[in-house]
Length: 605
Ligand SMILES: Nc1ncnc2c1ncn2[C@@H]1O[C@H](COP(=O)(O)OP(=O)(O)OP(=O)(O)O)[C@@H](O)[C@H]1O
Image (tube, rainbow, N blue to C red; front, side, top):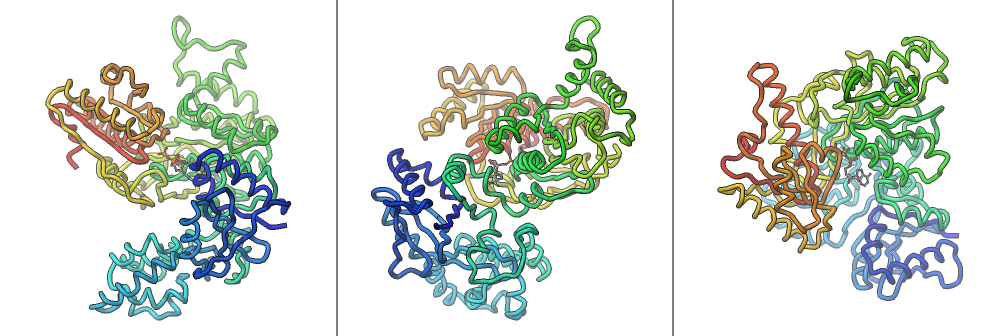
């Protein structure tokens, strides 16, 4: 029986094909997996760069490209016949000699680039001072060293990026940017697979390399596994090494705090950690996030991730306010009033819930039977906005034990006035960082980072910079439009949204937002009949869209007028910056910002 591994691009490419082609391709793959009559046969590629590459006829006019070694097949892509043959001819595959992950090279393009690089060599090679052994020590492929020796500047390395495996480009880029060999090695090390897949590296063993490359390949043993990989979004299946290590660590002795910029996969890691704890933990799991709306969204994503009903039931998804309400309601036998006579504030209810929890579980020092705590593991998303009282409640809801608390957050995205470090609350969390944004383009990211500016306090000490926040791809620059009047700004908004819809962007992949509800109402009126929704900036928190339009980013509106008192003023201005930063960083592909009259001072970047 063939052993089939699916590459991360394949499910997306398959779903983009016409329905009949897709159906045929899935049937062909199932046959291939079961090795039954009618299964497609691997066909070798004439003139290919790698003899292990073959194609499989998956549907009329469409072929899958596979890399095979004995009975192991790695399915890279599915394309119309001519494109599939061309893809199959141009690529070669290897194993990183240091970390053992699989690498894909655009060999044909590199052959074309080499003479151009050779011609342009006027100055000394950028890596002349480093011997071959040292370059190989940071994982660079011995066959590619002659090419790398032709590089004379940082721009060459940037230009080679699309043609190189990321595990070759990343350390090379560090060296080219002036980093040391040790820096480059650390960069490579970030791609190292988690411990369980380590072991001696055999550059000829594709199977072992694929097993190590959790973000590049997933093995499917039967139809159920195949369908699952094809039908669920990529984040459910393919975890980059860093996310994988954080989410699937066997055991954390201390609480964990993962910080990372917008779109770096914090929520994905939180979901995978919750799923891991459901499967391998030792009791009920609570996954909390900022609002009830976000909790519902997380619950729906968790349904995709955990398909086993018994495991799924081990995870409750909620927000801290509802958690407090639930605990008080259980104790008092009815839902506490939030308005009217006898109403309590949410802070009072949180404190009451904490008191009730400590009565029920003995004391707050946790020398109690862990079974008496409502949860065994707690995972927190949007940790930057959890208030001190809520942290105390969460702390008390699980026993102090290994794998008790796992939190993810971004201090730069704080939209509340919470400003507390976990250490000061007696939660000695070990900090990890995620730095690569999977959502934002480099253009949008640098715009947003400049706009955010300034330090962000809280969560952890010393979080003053953007902790190496970077993007994996390039895209469109954000557009800032100035209008003379509010009416022309709203007409401009309508025109923009109409053009986006005409581009074929689905209405639910477009978000329109403004700082206050008055402007949101105006936007909704301007968009009448277009089926595109408008919200306040804060409402966009935690969400993601293909295109985002923010209106009313004008002086006097953003920021909202801050208080006079200097401390309160500084805090309010930081919060306002964060709120705009959150709104801007929801866009995957395009960000449009408009104002009438003078623009917001935050826009003068
Ligand atoms: N392993 C992955 N594979 C595929 N896509 C991923 C992966 N990790 C993250 N993404 C995608 O990147 C985007 C951002 O991920 P996520 O929402 O988890 O980031 P975040 O750090 O929580 O963002 P924010 O703080 O801005 O809310 C999402 O579209 C997500 O599906």
